[in-house]
Image (cartoon, rainbow, N blue to C red; front, side):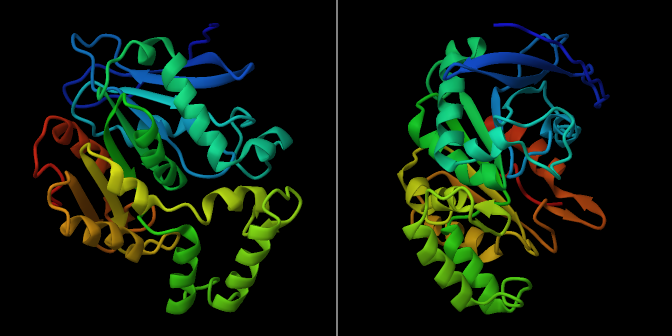
Length: 305
């Protein structure tokens, strides 16, 4: 495995500056970039976290460290870049390689292979790794937890428990633009039927993605996957999320209220956006900072201040 090291430093209270290191790994014969964000000077190694980012072809790696600025423990985060993402890309134009590989099943498969082949992760025992998913990554993360026994914690932000096809209809019924205007419930139902019939089409698009992309995302049922997991789980959403309706997160909450034997928590950030932000609070940083206590079994780790 060839290694190219890129170091980014920032200061956190009481902890030496972590470093973001770029590495390369071969998955299915293709060279891939991944990043390890850690504190080389730390005496103890932090909880291993696999981060799964949201949709799009922007270079997420440059933003990764900011999410952990308030994390109170040594960081130990692994991030596999999506195939075909160009370094320093702003996401305005995606490569043909990215578009061809931008599929739910490929992102899932890539992460499972990454866990099995990355040298550090490969050596870790069962239930020793946490998976943290943002937005689209939050929809994929439960499947990673289901399919890999090394995952011992599941945390998501900006994703819920309903099918994405149902989420769009909720927005349309609520009158949220553009789902209700210029689009409509009837329009979505018509497009859903087309995608079911023509789900292998890379040329036809809906909401900025190909039919191939949507055939993997629209109809998957995350609640069914969550229900099968027997590990600690937490899902965070902003009350005013305009990408995923809060009803989707509350569907998870309501399901697990009926199943108290499961270790699940739902954290709703009042007035917050899809990124858990309000005008005066960065909820994403707050949520991630709270993960450190949650990994140690503290049940009240996510009490909002």
